Length: 269
Image (cartoon, rainbow, N blue to C red):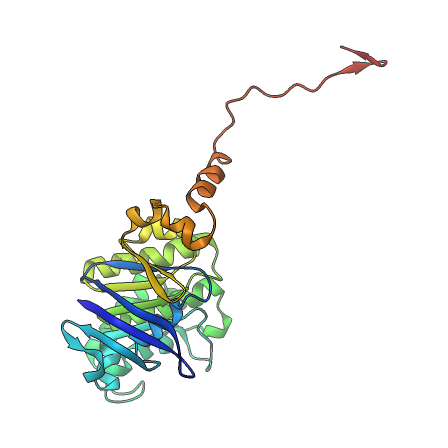
């Protein structure tokens, strides 16, 4: 559904990513991994045409550069690391912004289909009872769910995530990714996300694109990439070994309890 070929992009005339190529099919969740500064966010911005790039990005065989901006907004949605609250809209008004690319006015003249899409997204993200609240009154987890609902109301073919779970607790991380993964599978869409937590990637990812120094270090099935020695070479640490060692600390100890020596009046008992 999406294919990237020989992509170069960067800032101020200097390339941050170089010769990146991969593809993702409908119903697939592809996770982008790599150390800080390797070009993960730059890659998402290039795909979404937020920054200029060289190379080719196609959606269903059509080059994204051929789309008008509003038409592209119907196809691609980007959820960034920390979405800012620029205006004190209600939850429903914020979710309604997802229909802008499909409508003829700004929060006006919404069709019955638009309203149905907004209702569906609000219900799916369990926001119905707070849809009238102002978003600047919400917790971080609630706010992220609102922004995810906005994306689902937009109904894009491709969702791009740029570390959207960084400031969320584990419960909200798992729930947010669960909503998105289910939606991608049910709607036969594509999700491409940047992540640092490899446990979440193991749980939710189908395929992995591993970047190192702005180039592709590996691309393939999540299980294959996350178990390979290439992770150690890219991150400079045995991540799999560290994870397994950490897991042991969650297991109940099989060793008998240690008995401290007892003394009575200075004599070992």
